[in-house]
Length: 473
Ligand SMILES: Nc1ncnc2c1ncn2[C@@H]1O[C@H](COP(=O)(O)OP(=O)(O)O)[C@@H](O)[C@H]1O
Ligand SMILES: O=C(CO)[C@@H](O)[C@H](O)COP(=O)(O)O
Image (cartoon, rainbow, N blue to C red; front, side, top):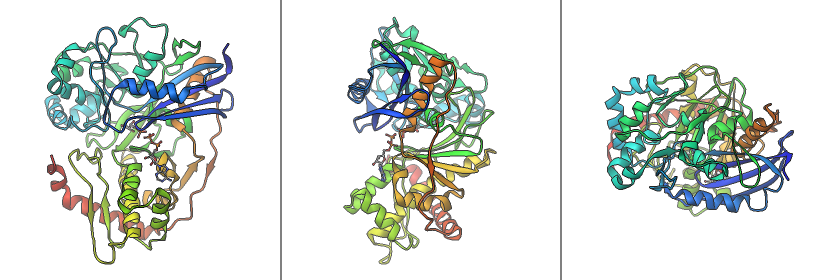
């Protein structure tokens, strides 16, 4: 028996699957589970199914509707029977860097892409992975009949009432990160699939924002689902003037917007949201894991790193370019991290801890500035994701981001947004769920000191850009 008061949301993100079961009217979280994913940039989707099974174990009794949000962009290639033909290539896999350069130029350059699909592809975009797989795994490519995103695939696995790949579905939000769908025309560009892959593929049907797209074996209705950032926007109920800065595996800055954007510089991706609107977004490859890697380097845990960064009187000119996994924004897929400004004074664990927090936040400060440059109002920043739990991040963010910062109560906002979409799908109304907010730690940087930190970061980036762009291939 299902209970219309119980809805579930799933976040199949990079590092883990998280599941929440909520009260459909209030959004109160009643049950919660999570399970980790392998630490890799190419992952067998069966691992997501395994993680979902563990994370949802014992939680689903009575759930009447379910929605899946997923990490954006991952390429899941399926054969005619729906079997996976190659490990999913994730958003943070940079193997398609050369394919990206070729594809961007073949269509006529960044302007042509921005005008066709609202975004200039970087190696995260699915379209570049399609081109890459042709050369890297020709046998798998030859068997492929359909291409799906992580949330499309998991939704398809959960739907007990589908007969094959022709029944695959996606939504506007997630499909807007493929590079073959235009948010401004709401249409696929099959010619771009052919440009990348050399032939056509079955593409999922784009479901409406509050549509029911199937039924699970346990009797719940399946909502359309969406990309993880679009789901976070729903979970936070972002309003005009709100910018979310999410510090998870990726660093993202995004806002809901009433019209499509198109940034030929490639900084701002012109995505769609999960409600029928738009979600301009800037994404960096390096966020929370910059802090965990620095903690490992310094032989500290995250709490000690935090304490050290807060007690340091400043970074004293020590700059960390935090491109530990290559970087997406700026577009430097082959780059590595860089520490600049070592002296006997700055060669201290606390200074290094401070430089790591500052470096990560400077990347996001550039992201927020890029949204401003697109005309998006930034009245306040909502800080979320794993690394927003860091007290040092909370204290440094307002001055570095140049905006008042609020902290939504720690919660799984992607999974919550998916659950809210599930409630919408079965009731026909998008419920209003309260999000409790608090103020961050008192600021430890003056605006002047923050401007200095950002100027040094910008100078090190521009001075070393040629080296970062070409080295370490
Ligand atoms: N107090 C903290 N300080 C810094 N990083 C943290 C803290 N708590 C969790 N994290 C980091 O947050 C990350 C997970 O964040 P999350 O938003 O769940 O990521 P994702 O959605 O990409 O899986 C992990 O890398 C973890 O180390
Ligand atoms: O690629 C993007 C956004 O364009 C990433 O934000 C992914 O959607 C992965 O998100 P997390 O796992 O870091 O939440």
